[in-house]
Image 1 (cartoon, rainbow, N blue to C red):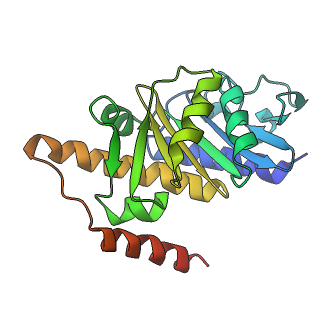
Image 2 (tube, rainbow, N blue to C red; image 1 turned 45 degrees about the vertical axis):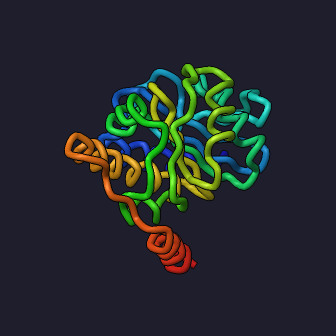
Length: 211
């Protein structure tokens, strides 16, 4: 069941490792198909994963298929999927620069065109603290996405979402690049941001390019 999606999740997890966004077994990758969610297992090193290690659960959290336990964060992810039916995929990471930004800021403004392109909004918000494995992670994500494809979870990591895994992956990767740039220049002064018009144009260009 869902062999194509399981392989896509595995390929995405390996890309996250290549981009230095996840370590060992931290975080998770998931896809929603109808009333079911395919998700990475709990506590397994991504480098040792096979497609058959993925777990299928329904939107109430019942296991449908798989020999492993689903990700510890399933309860929060299911809250996101149940409350945002337009979302088809989600990636949760503990990426270092974005997490570091959450220690000193409440949001990441539109400082780079690549950020705005990938997240589809002019601001990425930092959520209130929510512990791993709790419903609160899903609640703060839903409350703070505000049209963006990513939020930074304070002192925790990042939740990136999209219509598919490609959108979620791009949001996570380019958010990290922007957070790195922000933190690099912050000691020298307040980073410049794109104008309202520049940000809107960047969002529109990306939307039209992918039509």
